Every structure is written in C-alpha cells, then in structure tokens.
Image (cartoon, rainbow, N blue to C red; front, side):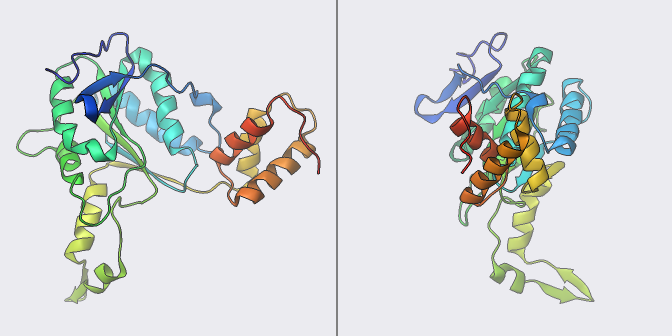
Length: 261
C-alpha cells in the first residue's frame, strides 16, 4: 500500500509519518501561527519566503536548515510558512529523526504528485554512532537517482552541523604544506549540513526584541511600562529571552490582571 494513499492532498495541507501504522496520518489541528505575528526574525522570514516562492514556481531552490538558540522561532516560522502558502499548493510532511530511515519510501510516493512538498524535520541532530542521517543525505542530493523536483527538506536544529563535535576530532586534523586538512570525523559532520543550500541562523533575543514580541501578544494593554516590567521579570526567572518565553508569559497572564510586585 502506498504510504500516501490514505491522504487526500487536495484537502489536506499537512501530514505526519507514524511508524506504528507504517504510513502518513493527516494532521487534524494545524498550528494557526500566522506569518505576520512573528517578530524579531524578519531577515530569516524574508530568506525562507523567497526560497519557498521559487520552489512553488518550479524555479531552482534549496533545502533549508534553520539552526541556533532554542525558542527563537525556528519551528514557528516553518509552521507559519505552511499557513501562508498552502493555498498556492504547498504541502508539508513532518518526519521525526527516528523515522528518517523511511524517508526514501515517503518521497517515492509523492514525487509524481502535482503538489509541492516540504519535508519538515524538527529539532534535528544526530549523536555519535547514529546512521539515520544517511537516508536524509540521499533525499537531499540523491544518489544514482536525482532527488525529486517537488520535494524540499526544511529542518531545524540547535546544532549548526547537526552532528556532535568533539575536541578529539579537531586534534586529529593536520597541516600539510601550510594548509589545514580537517579530520575525517569533521568532514563527516560538515558534509551533512553542507547539503542544505540555505542555512539561516537564529540567536537569543535582545531585551528590545523580546519586548516587541510581548507587545505583539498584548496589543490592548495600556500600561506598557508595567507590562514590560513584568515580562522582564518573567524572563529573568526563566533565564532566557526568546519568542517561546514571550508566548509562555502570554499564556500565564492573558486575560488576567498583571501582578505588579
């Protein structure tokens, strides 16, 4: 049975691979995050939108790796991307890292469809000894068979190179004729990330950007000074300023009176 046979892509914008059923399940409740609601990552949004629009138009486009600090909007911008372009034929399939071994089979069943598919791999990284990245490599650049024109991979990760980096790997590098030759382990680490032609970095929010995100979530609060004071206190308690912290602050205090102590 085809892994995509149970999904009606004319009415279904996204699906997720479930290993226990060896197939795709249509996502029933999409995250409603909207493109315009995201703040502090305008540069990354513009680059990802431009790449996606080229992909939808059948023009040359890249696989994308969004890497950097946690909670800074890497996953949200991809979810918002689907909400923005679904009416233009964009479809999305979420595949967990542990299921990447099934990726070639998934791609085989969608490569002849008229829709444009983004394979979404969230929080992607590999530990030493893991081999799941090999299936991903073949989909990113193909092997004997070229990768399909209607499939791109968009992945998020806290690691720039997706693979663990050890001091011993650097010590194994050497100099030859004045040139640095990386060790084989380093070449292996970098080779996977190199297959993502578009790499976008995300960094922890400054206080100004964090407060902009808070303001966007509390448009009707009149006392901005008090709101900012409590938002800063909340972020200090968590030890991090980012979009996720702003969302958590909103969930805790939305619709209630903000404490002022």
